[in-house]
Image 1 (cartoon, rainbow, N blue to C red):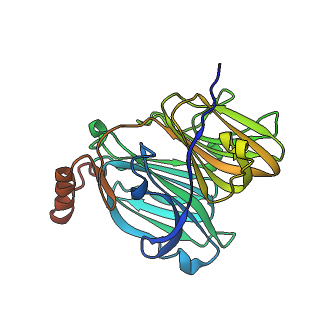
Image 2 (image 1 turned 45 degrees about the vertical axis):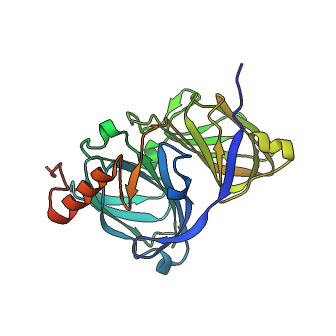
Length: 290
């Protein structure tokens, strides 16, 4: 018999500046460690004002993590030390495994709709994979299946499985799920989740009751993260008059120590020291571009 997960905590995103002065909303980050293990940080970037985002994220290093960028609307131009380059546009996903070390830049552009809207998620790598070779995946919108269920619910599947249909991102260490879910008004939706995995929802638009928030009649709205307890094998969402859109993310916790400074995440302070010394003196990039 299925057990529905209960809510651990709900919190609201907070405005902040990152990169060269990009206005965004921090969904979670260092202060929430390790509540969302294996996830480290998530940013919500949305603006109609080019002055708030065009400065972008110039060249910077990463080691020990994966960065996942989902562009809902607009364009982001990217380059990295592996000689990958291109533009991710509306509906595209960039899944970059920094591993042993990579340099890259992400520069938002003024797209056809004159706005930028998307999300960046950081996922941790286990100690055994921190120094793996970097790899990069451009996942175009046309490659991401959108499943429409009989209830009217639509699910875009970046990673994971719905109704026997799998997303294109596979073979990731933390065994993630990443879905963009829209539920029409007056509809109940349930989705199985893996026992023990960290699961959270981030509300994009509309309002809904998430699991036991229904007991208090409380509907959770945009900009709120809903973090579930680990016990249970499904989540439930019930909409009212407005319907809801949210991102659903899940992953296998690592349960390892975290040493984190800026764009580099390792397991010990000594590993951090080595990484920054290599960045300053040379030797940071282990895998050369072919």
